[in-house]
Length: 284
Length: 258
Image 1 (cartoon, each protein chain N blue to C red):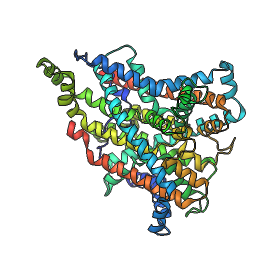
Image 2: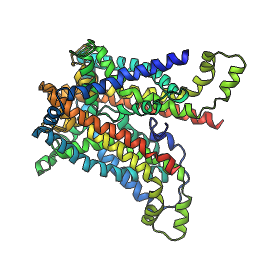
Image 3: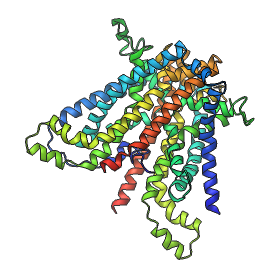
Image 4: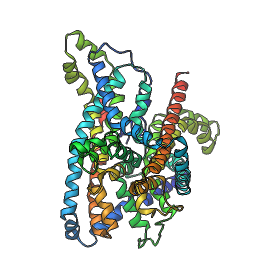
């Protein structure tokens, strides 16, 4: 329990708010130069090429391409499902973290390990797995293949660890003294959770939810098999982009991709904001 | 009472969402016997896909490990304007759709792209190994950085400064002091990077063309209605994932470095 590194479920950004004043280590400038060069070649240059390609026909053309009926339907579906997925994760993830930290039962270590499986399992395997069980000819007689429910299952599968792994360390560190004091003063368990535990967990829940949302918006491998990719019905934004790329319609693929890129940046900014608020509270 | 309800609810959710589906893939792969599954996963196409996956991992994992350590050092040990922005860029691959990553590479290295001219000089990036490696480098970039950064913050610079005062050269300081302190975090990051590189689907799909890594092979087999091949290859990938989780659990890196 808790052997997963603390940085899991958090972002690098969160641990580097205040760097120590730099010891005059020589080689610092070199490391910085190499690091920036690598980031530029591997990450920034491709993204710059994407933005360049999307704006080739002017800003208006991005808007036109992203609001084409099929693209707009895919974006709406993706954002809606990702929002529902984030909400379900907020509840289920917190409940799972609670069970893993506060409850005792045989096999808890194994359950704790299983949470990491969606991080490690290739997304296409996750998709095939769900299709085998909840698709045509599945053993339970449940067939949600090519439906939005099927899509939802896939998103819930791949986003499961985010809230659990964000909340778990905070819950572990949370002192039970306040809760015991509240209980001795006659507070019911629900009141204790709402007034004491929940406010302490909220920043962690929100960070986890934000990451889960971003992941759900961009997910491709897990949804591509089970969703059936029916335009206007079950076609997710990432699948739409891939389809446009395959039919050599690069400008509309790039336009929708830029929308997803800005959603991702927005989510990261939001997480940064949550983190800053939390550190400010800690200091006071 | 409510404790039991919570326990049954959460464990039931996990079982239905995670355990039963993954277990069922194993059942499907082996329902016609082990020999059948073995046969399905040792066809030339499957073996070729596995080889390509391992070759790309053999390139991408060391590269991202070395540069991940350098990035972490630069982020923690130096101050420069725009560091916050760099942090955001490091985290971006975690929040960005893999298909967007693949498309970006496609646009950069494809015909008409800024680096599309490389193909005219005999350097094929798209639809070959370099493209697949670049896609996996992008998506797996944050893992080593994210594991190493908090440890570097924790150990501080006192020992490094002491060594410097005693006349140690930068490489000596890194080899004798910094690296031993971060090695478990690096190992963790390497395992996470490897798992992601082997399993990456979306980004690789966009740039691989007709080349198939093992995850792409799974999809191709499903689309060819050869489900036994798809299930067998999935079991190989699932076993790699399970091994990843087990290895990560076994490391307990924080107890070693803390």
